Length: 176
Image 1 (cartoon, rainbow, N blue to C red):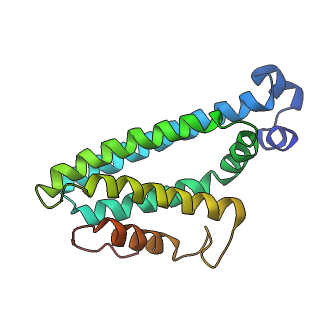
Image 2: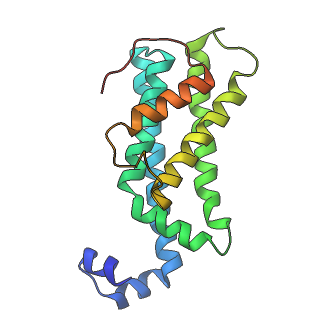
C-alpha cells in the first residue's frame, strides 16, 4: 500500500479510506485491467475483420497482445497470485474475461476460416490458449527460463507453439 500511495502521490490513509483494504484496491485495479483487455481485444478483432487478416495474422497479434498486457500489468498479476493463494475466487474475473474474449476471437476466426477447420479445431484452440496463458503466468511468477517474459523472442515462440498445436491455417506471416 505504501508503494501504491507513493506512486499515486497520495497517502496510505487516503488509499484505505477510498478502498477499505488492500484486497479491494487490487480488485479495483483488476477491474480496470480487465476493461483494458476487453477494449484492446475488441479493437484487435475489429481491425482484423476490417482488413481481412488471415487467421494466422490475427492469432499472432492476439498472442502478442497477451504478452504485452502481462508485461504491463506484471505487478498486478503477481499480487493477484499472492492474494489467490489462500482462495482461488479472485482469479474468477480473469478466467471469465479470458473465456469471453476467446469466444469473441473464435467467432471472428470461424468467419474467416470458412470450412478450413475440422471438428476438433475449437477444442484444440481453447487448449492452446490455455497453454499460452499458463506459460505466461509461469514466466511471470517463477521465471523458469530459458524463455522469459521480457525476452524479445517470447511472442514468436508462444505463437509458434500455439500454431503447431492448433494447426493454424497458413497465411501471410506477420514480421516482428
